Image (cartoon, rainbow, N blue to C red; front, side):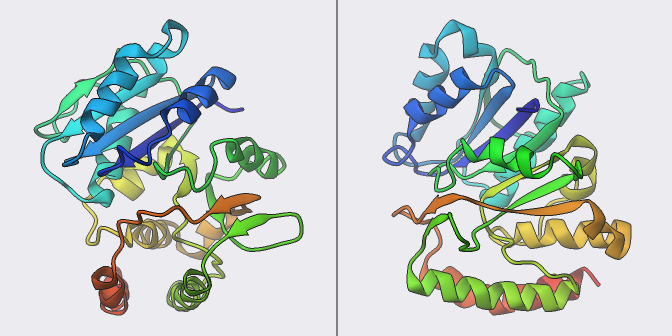
Length: 266
C-alpha cells in the first residue's frame, strides 16, 4: 500500500469506535497513519482516543495522532483542520495556527504520498484501501472517491430509503457539476497532497456537503479537465452502521444547501 495518512473525524463515537480494527490495520500496513479528530464529543470519545494513543503498541505509536476539540466544529471543519495539519507536518512546515484551541497528542512525524478522510464507523472497512490503490494502479489518479454502487461481487448493505435518496442526490450533483458522479457522499476518499491547499485551505460553507464543495473547488481550478485525474472506486464492502449523525432536520435542508453551494461556487 502507498504511504497514506487518513483523518478520522469523531463526534460522540465512544460506542461505535472499533479501536481494535484500527489498531489491526495499522499493524498490517506499516505505510498507514491515522489522525483522529475528536470534534467536541460529549460522551467518552475523548478518553477512548486518549487511551488509544497512550496504550497502543510501540511499533505503531508514531502513526497514531489525536486532535481534541472541546467545542463541536462540524465534520467539515474537523476534516479540514486535520488534513491541513497533516500536510504541514509532512512538509516539515512551522506549527500551524489554524488548529485553534485544541489538544494535540502526536510525536509530530507524518510521511505520506496520499492523504484522505475515512468515516469513524468503518462502514467502509479500512481493508478497502488496498482495493483503492489496486484500481488506481494503471492511471495514478490524484483523487480517489469511494462509490457505493452495487455491482456483481460487491456487498453493499444500504436501507432502501438511503439507496434511493442517494441516487436522487447523485443525479442533482451530476447535473450541477456537468460530470457523471455516482456517489459524492461516501466517507472514504484519498488524494495526493498537492490537492489539499486547493480543496481545504478555505473554510467550507456547509458541514455535510463539503465533499461536493471539494469537487466544485477542483472544477473552478481545473475546469472539466479535473475529471482526468479523478477516479470513482466501486467499493466491494459497505454496511449501513446505526448511529448516523445526519437527522431528518439535516435531510430536509439538503435541497436548499445544494442550491446554495452551486450558487456560491459559480
